Amino acid sequence: MQIPIKNKLNDKELFRIKRMKEVIKTTHPHGHKDYLEVIYLTQGEGLHLIDHHRYPVQPSSLYLVMPGQIHSWELTEIPKGFVAMIQKDFLLGHPLYNLLFRTFPIAFPSGFQLAHISDEIANIFARIETEYAGGQTNFQAIIQTYLLLLFNLLQREIKSDNQQPFPQTLNAFFALLDQHYMNTHEVNWYAEALGVTPKTLNAVCRRFLDKTTGAVITERLTAESKRLLLYSEQNLGEVAYELGFSDPSHFNKFFKRQTGVLPGVYRKGIS
Image (tube, rainbow, N blue to C red; front, side, top):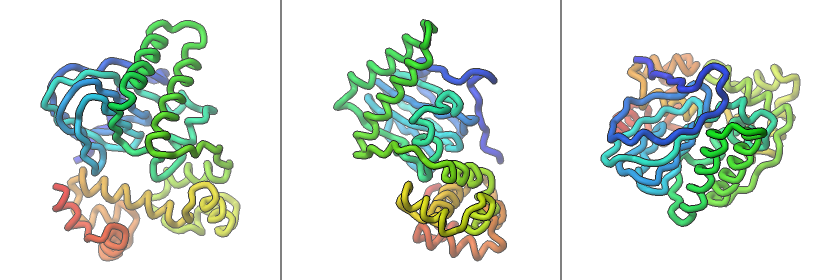
């Protein structure tokens, strides 16, 4: 069974903010087509599942559902709040673009509890909503400014201030990785495709990400492995081949080395 990918935005629509639908519901796992969803709830109870993580739903909770992530709701109380949908192109050339869409693992956790700054966060969303509804001159730039404030506050929550721009080599590496990580796991292949030496690519990754090129590839592959084991109905052999492993036993060894358990044990445990 394929996980459905929803697209709530029109073809040329780069940004939208709306109020959370005030209904108690349980949704099927789904992803979003190439846009980030930022959800801030002022009311509600239940669970929000994002990839292989389970986050409690409670007042002053904020969630980030990145492009490619799978999520679903198990609500037990009517939710209230805001949902902002942000296409990647809305932030092209903006400091947030690299931070949100060109880092792996993702620079932010998927869930925050923000009761201690709830008024400030709610005010940001209310102002974004006002700008979006008004559509006056430069409203998009003003929304981007509020988004920058929001993510700076979230960085403060995780004690991070890394916003230095990435070099073109690293951006190109991320673009290649997006396309080929399922079938190409070798550092040398990425370096050759980029026209640099493996040593140079490794040095760039270490400087800007504090990890090796191989570690970046491995983390991406591990995250996708978990996602497929959690949400797909493929058997373990099919998962292994989809991820580019020549033999299921190689996938077993890889997954256990990264997580400490075999894929079958992981799937059974999270089910």
